[in-house]
Image (cartoon, rainbow, N blue to C red; front, side):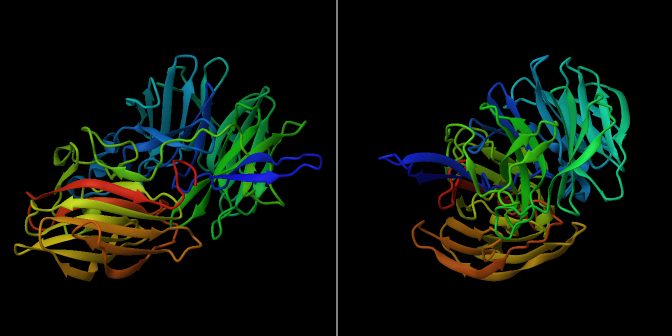
Length: 525
């Protein structure tokens, strides 16, 4: 987000323009941030849980305008059958949690690693951030949970992670094996837990960043005696308020040195229903070697001076016509898709991939994060090839979901809004939803629209409308209250879906997906 502030000097005849970014740096659900400065360009990795491809990579040239460039985990199939929804299995809130990535200057390769299902650790690699990424190794039965990566000056990789206490694992220089692992810090009584570990080296000292979510405290541990410690602890931030009205205290951060020589701390604030969104603040180092976040009256600032000249990126909003033969990099599927059941060719064709009455059991729901504080998504869908029992359309997706779409039964298609599609906190379906509104429709093309207010300080509602000409839209189904509970972790997304309730064989063709969010451009608003 960008603002221009004018200040008039005492002796100046003309105003001077001071450039400042505004927090959050972008309204988008991208939690568990790991950021890197690689040869003067900034990169950002985040969690995706059960969405595929996983672990998105974003790029920036100024730290506040960000664009998606790839995913470190090409699909979740390596993690087991439940990620493919095989035999009725599901993996909601499994998959890619807080993980690590970096570019290794010693061999010219990129690496990503993380613990899956609290049991296995996977490592992927690529020659460039855009990919292709491939699985390098799996460490069965070893969970490097909430982990961070340091590649030391001699090329030795160290991975920080948590279990009951704080650990470091030394990997071989090719990342293919674990050399040794040991506890480097035993949690004291005032730390009830720790999450989001990151490990760094600066001026010969080693640093361990971790947070205790129960007290909204970020800690820093420092060792002057080598990577294995001993480590001493200080508080980095505790209870500092965030810049998002209705949001939480920002925690679980990552640090880097910007091109201007200033260090920065990027963390996230829990801000449902949009999700966990990034906050950026300068980081200063004391003469004693300890860091401190540059707060404003004890809290995270709403604005700070730009790290460098703004470098705008392509707008996140606008129309995707599904040109070419592959999906854009912002799209992620609910679980690994059945690739035989969709195609892209100047439009998106979705064949029904699952027979189910449970929206959460259906494969091939295609999703995008909701940009901005309020956004409206519209799809143009041809439904001539739907068969009896099919359900297809546009959804707002989380553990409490709803959709507007076409339902076809007994040879008749109708516009339908379904709300109250719910999971419990164990992510088991408790309600398949109920019809909130219906309308008759003629022809075979429909415009479906969903508006969602996702800022925590908004009314947190979604509304539905449809059109048969793309100009005149009719409201349907009333409003749907968005869930702000944290247990699902991820924020709301827009989703395009098609599933069968009777038999496979039907399909729909989505001509375009358009999303509009007032004032939202690329990574800035």
